[in-house]
Image (cartoon, rainbow, N blue to C red):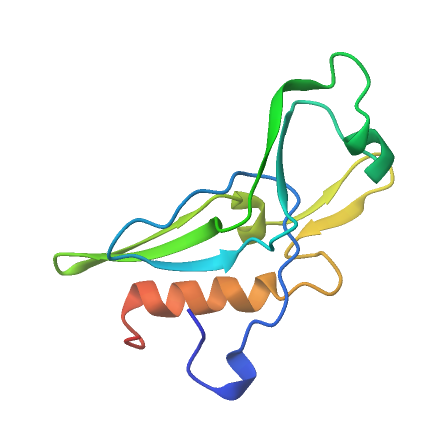
Length: 130
C-alpha cells in the first residue's frame, strides 16, 4: 500500500501496540517487523529497554517472541472485495496516552501513520489498483 504519487510514500511507522503475524499466501504483507523486533505479551506498560530485558516478576504473562520475518499489516483480495488486516489498530487512531498526554497512533511525531491510513482507504475503495 504505497500510494499513488511519490508524496504518498510511507517511510516510517512507529508501532507501540498490537500483534505481529505471518502474511498469508496470496496476501500483500506490509509493516514488516525489523530483524531485531520483539513481540511482548504484557498488560502493563514497559517503560524502558532495561525493564524489557530484565522484567520484574509478574510483568510478562507469557514469554516474548522474536517478530523477525513477521508483519503488522496485510492486504488481501477476496473475490471482488478487498480486506486489510492490521495488528496494531492504534495506527488508525489519533490519540494521546498516559498522564502526560503523549501522542500515539497518527499523532506520533515522526510516524507516517496518517499517510498509511489514507493509502489504505484509497486501496480499499478501489481508487487505485496495486
